[in-house]
Length: 538
Image (spheres, rainbow, N blue to C red):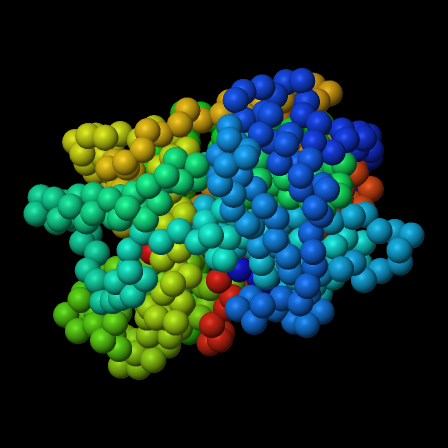
């Protein structure tokens, strides 16, 4: 599962919004709703009070953040362990782009999380440059990005040498042998040991509930009674957990491309389900390429396009493209087609050019960028730390082998790659937590807006339906027949719903639908922006 980048924008059909009640007023600083209890409650209160008193000292951003001079940066202190609020702390980095519009229409700060686990939102102040929804929202909201605990400069977690993590070429066996499986188990065990060595005392505190508690401390540091939050992909799970722990602190909550929060889905089953959903999106891409065989010459049927891809896969294992792209890097790159339709044309062109003896475009999209090794390894480390700690994982390899063999029979494209990415959880050195039972009662929350696409690969649509059932007062807007992961800022109909909700607190009341965006046009050569969302096997 992968972290977010800046989304792209394309048009679609608009729907009329129905009225819903305005958002309820939120509780004062540091106050927790009566439904929340547990050993961390006092620690959250203390940390929120301290954050409200300290505020955030906004300054010019460090050069490392690569933000414009108009952006501001600061830090917020959070306890490593909320049961020991006077103990060790982490400083979370925070960024801000001030609201640009009429002060009379100012709505406050809008906090953003792009997904992951391991995603970094420090670049959120850049989003208004895209125009459209983001520019309009920034007119009324301060855009607040942040790096969650362990991410970026927020006391970064690292489990192995970054260059060793990213270096290619690597082989991805379609039908792994017993020897391959044993080798991958040894590698996973070594990785888990590396994480435990790096953070022996903190490792058990990288959890989604702690990310939600950190979010409430950030709310207090911003001086807000109620939180305005927009989460994409894994960010929706943080938002769902936040709504459960702090329903009285929610002002506006937008969840985009939604993780299934059912306790028995987090996280082992979620990854198996994700493999099947990505396979469906892979079929969508192959079908689209086949429809444009006159442009790409990769086959007139999805099966023929798969054969072309398999031929390239075998070729890069015989002779790695650019010396760094093997089958693992190839599969990881083309998983992007499951995230965003914007990748379809340039990735088809890259595959087509390689078949014609021009490897440059394929190398451009698939080669490891060693300049990003530190960032990629950090994101992967936090991904494993959170997912392995959030919920129990099977500790016996036969269970993994059986479940992934069954899944690979119907979803061969990414199943084994995803299994190897998650396998450190079978060897994790701390005792995993019990997932929070996400749910709210009628009247606990103000209206909440859920948005999702029916063919999403990274967060299957069932997650949106389950979240709507669990968060009383939520409304779901569906992009029907579409599969882009992260629907905000790209569909005018969706954007209209989001804008109305964030500006006026109104949802459709009942569920609503938007038409899918037009299919991409063939022939594009430029490399698109990466898709936002959950981390998938890389």
